[in-house]
View 1 (cartoon, rainbow over the protein chains, first blue to last red):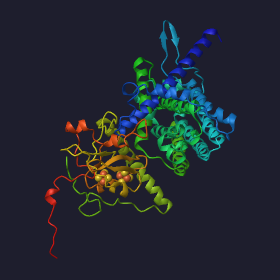
View 2 (view 1 turned 30 degrees about the vertical axis):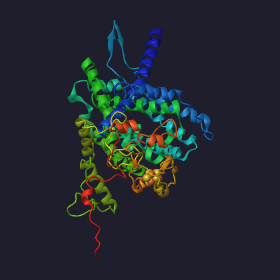
View 3 (view 1 turned 45 degrees about the vertical axis):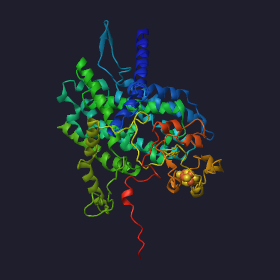
Length: 329
Length: 207
Ligand code: SF4
Ligand code: SF4
């Protein structure tokens, strides 16, 4: 392992951290604007032109706010929980290829921190660890809303891990590799080769599960404002709460990347056009997260469990079996 | 400025726009529930929702009122911070110190002091309304026989001091404004309804 490699990796890590922390901020701005427009409002308007500096105002607010650790919480766990959410979100990014490789001044850059051969397994695994953020934070908070939220998040994440895993199994059987770069290259032939055409069911299932994994609106019960306040985040303030927030938005971006790469052809053949297409696909998925929040109601926890175990899981299993049979003959 | 809103019949009837929403029977058996889910899943209701919000976003028909810059018009009979008016011709205060407003105020927040002046006229020396207690019911304006105390249209009553707006000097129309003809004789609460002359009828004496 030479020095150049280590330096390159560190630079990549820092770049990814900075870009996606900033994107998480912009994500909140876009969310507020998109939701506002869909509800015939204007959204943030007063800080900066068209409210653009609202992000800076929010950031300053979060950083300078008093860091409150309530009296009866389990302090070490309460303090570590937000870090888990944010850290696992960014750790998952290590195996995601954000861009095709390109050459700068004769030096080939691979915009992926680690092209490990179990890439997608690693991404999903680390994202699943993110569950411990809401779970531990909620349980340590000494607050009944947080506790309910912790219970819900545990139930939802574990259930929907099953869906993500099973729905991905079928495409992975076709590709024969767990590396996201291999999956991408499998579809390099153009739109006709996208896995979404051969695995539409898996795509829909994974998409649905992505909403549960990120806790976005139809499945937003871990922090449903109108019934359990902010769920696991109720007792948090300042930057600790901000870490939860960054983790949530970073997760939304990363899962959008994963969906675009696995099902919609990723960056295609690796040209600039392909790279721009990847950005557009990710933007669409991110927009869809906001769009559903404006349009759809939330489902109840029991409905969610029902949907997972009685509807989605059987379909996912059937999908795997059918794919296997088709591949055999 | 006077305008009448047409009466809106909000009761459910045959010729109103309001109607009862049809509610389907709740599913009883497991099979019914399953059918309901299948129907809801594939009937595209979710996409109707998506389309509606997207359409609103594209139409960009924004309804936000950017409050300090833009303001909604308020109704002419809106009951905001009180005003004490003056007689147009002489510039005297209209208030004759009868004390009816003080008496009727249900929050007991009007306080006044009177004396007999040199011309043997009753003069109001102090008149204050504790706006911290006033519930803006409008009884004082309604009862005043001289149209002296009325509700003005000023609803932005944030101030550095509690005492603002509430003492006589703040509410009374200043003389210079009166001379400039700027005392607003709007059809506010407690004022004569425009065109009320026409509706005056002779008291029927014969039974
Ligand atoms: S508006 Fe009602 S509560 Fe306020 S001063 Fe007049 S009578 Fe009293
Ligand atoms: S009812 Fe009118 S005239 Fe009588 S004291 Fe009150 S403001 Fe003055």
